Amino acid sequence: MKKSLGLFLLVAVGLLAACGGNKSEANSDRVIKVASQTSPMTDVVKKAAEVAKKDGWDIQLVEVNDNIQYNELLNNHEVDANFAQHAPYMEKFNEEKDGNLVAIQKIYDAKVGFYAKDYQDVADLPEGATIALPNDVSNEGRALAILNEAGLIQLKDGVGFNGTLKDIVANPKNFQWLSVDLLNLAEAYNEKNVAMVYNYPTYIAKVGLKPADAILLEKEIDDRFAISLVAREDNQDSEKIKELKKAMTSSEVKKFLTEEHSDTLVPSF
Image 1 (cartoon, rainbow, N blue to C red):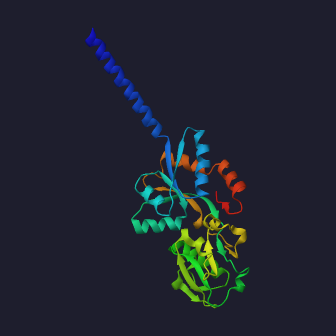
Image 2 (image 1 turned 120 degrees about the vertical axis):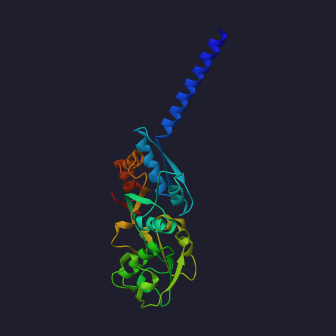
Image 3 (image 1 turned 90 degrees about the vertical axis):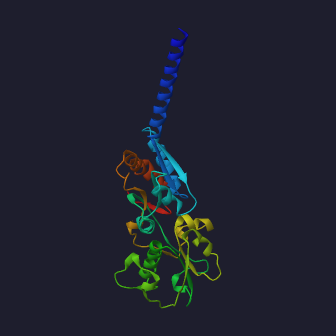
């Protein structure tokens, strides 16, 4: 009798453990990990999490503090997606790191441009002024395209947003160039030898500025530079990514972008 009771308890415990394991596994199947870096990207992920929760999905924000980790985490299968970059930046990562990242959905276009502490008009920029640009190829090309559009420099025909400093064929005011990591460009704004600095609203906010304070803004937005939801080739068609995309493009997220961040961005969905 004692042996039978002991066997019964052992089986019962085993069944409970199995049920608990299945429940835990089921819960993990409803978790979507998204790497992001700074506001408003992190805010969008949090808002999407509120939306997805209604359908039983748990979007978890994995916040990083630089422009490298979010891609490394995704490429290494440590998160399901990321939300922190535009497609050209992602494509450069794929080239350099043999990555397989894929842009899934454009979410918003940031209002980018140039800021100057001592000048109110680009016409006032002196001969030989130093202009601070981002040092990564994709953002450098975008910055140069804005200067080209404003007539401050001339790029080779056809380079568009893919131009580099080597593609400048005319520089009437003999501007000097200072290449700076995107995360440090805001600090360059206060440097005495820097006349004008390019930046995104997210980063220029560190020195108390917003697009309305820019001396020169991008006129024609190229939606290739829209901040986008990114996944991998192997999971881009998964249920998790489909649900994440659904939440990120919900009316609630669009309303949040429009009402809370209209001074810095434009929704692109």
